[in-house]
Amino acid sequence: MSSEAPRCAAPNETIQETTARSLEHPDIQPRKPTPINRLPFDIFQVIIAICQEGSETTFPFTVSHVSRLWREYVLSMPLLWNSLHISQSVPQWEMLEAKLERSGQAPLDIYIGQPPFVKSAIPHLRKIMRMIFPHMGRWRTLHLDDAPYKIRRILLDQIKAKSAPLLQEIQVFQSPSHDRPSRLKLKNTSPHWSATDVLRGFPNLDSVKWTSSVHDVNALPTFRNLKNLTIGDGTLSIILSLPFVQLIHRILSDSPSLETLTIYPYPTSTYIPTDGEATDLQLPTLTHYSLQRLFIESSDRVRSAAIRTLILPKLRVFSTIYYQNLVDLSCCNIIARENSLPELRAISMAGDIDLGLLEPTPSFHSQMPFLRPAIQNLTNLRVLTFRAVDFDNERWLPDVGSCCPHLRWLRFVFCTGFTVHSIRLIVQTRIHADGINPLAVLYIQHYYNAPLEDRVTEEDAAWFSKFLKFNQVNDFGHTELDYR
Image (tube, rainbow, N blue to C red; front, side):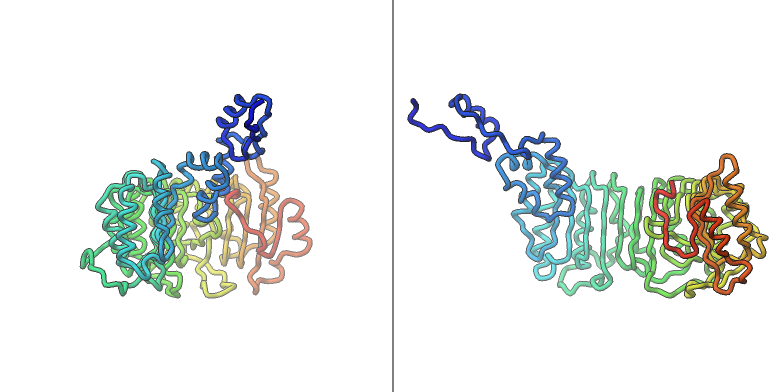
């Protein structure tokens, strides 16, 4: 009998150690590993990756200390270590270096915030550059968040001079309170520094979010060969319609494969161009064959001025996921004449309204004769909204009972010049028409001064409710699903 007492399986014992001990003591049955440790490695990877989303940056270190087996697994997962979040006043250098080492050859996602530069700007900047620049060949995303102006400038200059062939996304965010010359006594990299060429030299860059206040559109970087571009809130100060539309043309010309363009020009401004500024642009029409989503946070007149100069065969929506842009009826001419938006899924068309009013007065627009042929050309439309439009006793009311075969939502907000009887006829016609979808949602919110004979009665509401979702209060919205 052996003098050495046989051991039970240790909870952190590897499979190889358990097998060797079993051969040494065949009379002892090894303890079964816990259920979580019996998971196949590929399933373990999926679970840990899901748990990591939204977790602290120390998450992979925490997981690696659970058990010996988990540590083996986690150390063989380079994508668990490829995110560098440099946002503490005193960065955890050892932890960042460990992440760089354990990420292997995985693409790197780098976030640099403001805190490291508050008290020790230059030493921290140098250390950050020495740490991450040797790995530029692996950079996938770079996010600079409120870094002091001169720090950001030095970083961007150094990046521009090097190669980052895998870089796909750059985000630069500078809030107004910090976007001013820093009090740090830093030597200028250039007395006339410009961000114009800072995004050049990245062959795989396809997504940029740029938020940094400028007073001249020519001070923005050149956005070339992108698929997604966001010019963030407050980047552009007050500008007239012409240079603003010229900027859009420049962006679309420089990025022929652009799919999403989002612009927030001057949200805190009450400036709205006059009719002359927004209509007499005298710009040639530009055709762009890839743009699918266009969102411009501006006045309807400026937005419409841009759309009147564009032919966008693949555009689907003027919106983000949460908000849909209004365009005024001046866009009807080019839609009717050039069929400029054949793939559009949703549109909100407004009369010549005053945005300062909660209930703007319905109005006639000089482009109203083009409204009907414009709507007929929108054959892929799913959602159609009219806001503050006077249809002039139904003279200009489009016959959506026989066009727009995919239409599902129809909304009239503060409109006049139409009767409820005509809307009932549209609903009934679409129900019985071949090859045309019946309406699923109808929303009518009358202008407060609308005649009583034009308003929806209880009998009308009950009739509408038999066939679709009907409401006179805007308590439902539409989602991405409605655009498909």
